[in-house]
Length: 70
Image 1 (cartoon, helix red, strand yellow):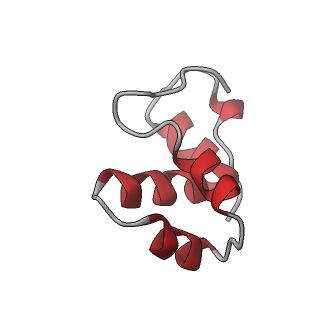
Image 2 (cartoon, rainbow, N blue to C red):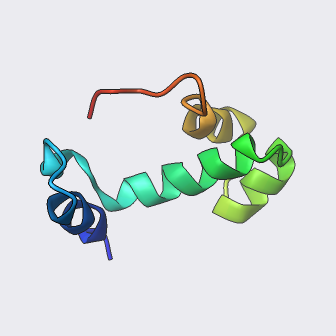
């Protein structure tokens, strides 16, 4: 499961396919929820996080704040 993002990136001929990991799936789902206006409590419940700080760290790169580094 953790290699799926790099396989997809390779198929799409994206640069730096090694930068895409299973961790990206978790980050992406949290970010998509935040972009959709879902509250932080629901995001925490979705991902199983207890810490608001951790959850906010995962969604800090939502639309308009995209991180271009690995």
